[in-house]
Image 1: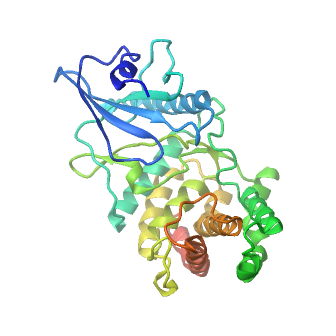
Image 2: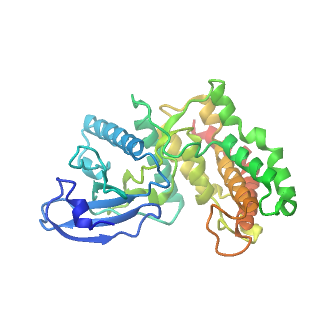
Image 3: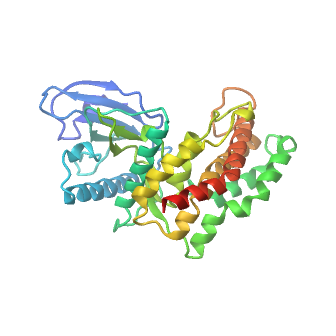
Length: 360
């Protein structure tokens, strides 16, 4: 890897650098804080982009540029103050692109947002703010004029995930199928129902939107007063169903147990997290949501634990080739925990529907 200072020099806007130090947030990309000498100048965030996860860097950065520029234009039209704290801004390299390739790695630089913090804890209060902000994020991008690409192809495609599971079952590479046949059968029983989004899309009844596709409380910045500044970690921002941003947050946030919870009695669907999140989301997203999207929001809450159970199960049958495990059988434990969460969310659908109807 080349010297970081040589990388930074490829982005002319950055002034004289005082120090560069690692930032701890994020596990996919390597991230550094670049502090400049002049206190009047901005500090910056330098990232080495993981091009194994995101193979098309040109598309990735094009998506991010379109999204951030569109949000910035909306904020300017609203005469918002302090816009540089409310949307990310990426710097141009010497060739005009918002990334630099050093022959081995791809790098990008964004403006560091001062006096900001991320949260890890999920509370009813933070869930409301997350729902409100991600709904606003989708709403601001509902009229993006350019087509964005899929930075991870078929990322939230349930039909594709079922195809992967069926291929794993057919190959039975690790000889584990007999051990999990009952779970495979249970998943298959609901497969058509859980693949309904793709069917509705093909029938022209369900649109794709620009979605974040990695909705968690740590993917937004808060100011010193606890107010949301902006959404961050935009690498997975791409066309998807609104269910991606609604259901993915609830899969982790509304789970009362751990992702690999061994005591399934601890796994429940927490309606006290669902309600404020749904309230915030619908409050800011209802300007563009269609009736069919609203109707299927409870489905979204079941879809993501189901999808994750499918992915963990396929990996277990394949011999644990994708997800890192720390003990034998962890992917099977994860499968059972996610499937239990799916069952709990499915049982809560009538309550979810009634609550959403009360918001409309």
